[in-house]
Image (cartoon, rainbow, N blue to C red; front, side, top):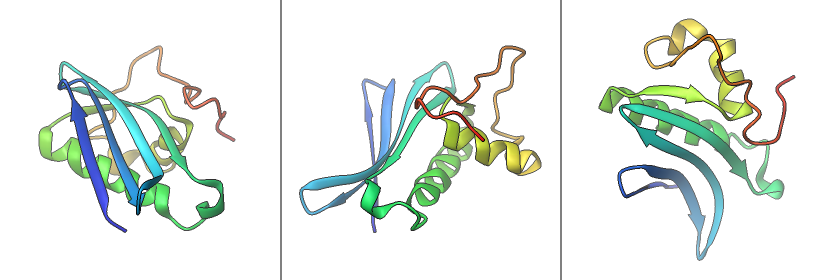
Amino acid sequence: MKIQHRLEDERRGSFFIMDKERQIAELDYDLKDGILNAYHTGVRPELEGRGIAGMLFDEMVKYARENKYKVIPSCSYILVKFRRHPDKYCDIWFRTEDEPVGAACGVRPK
């Protein structure tokens, strides 16, 4: 599976995977002042559990590091990944007192 990337107007971006003409997965973000707000990760239901979201996540982390961006994990999936291994992502994790709870996707972390 090939991960593609698009960035519109230097502010809204997405890492995504296409299967022929159909998008099967995406990780969407906003970008402002060196801060990447990762607010949504989605995989088509029939493809869940195959590590596709993890591949998108890894690509986003790589992109953030290459560009020296900090990441706000507004998406519940990304927040869980950061919380499980805070030492692994401390270089890119943008933390504040009013840190997002990962509810942007509409899914609350367990």
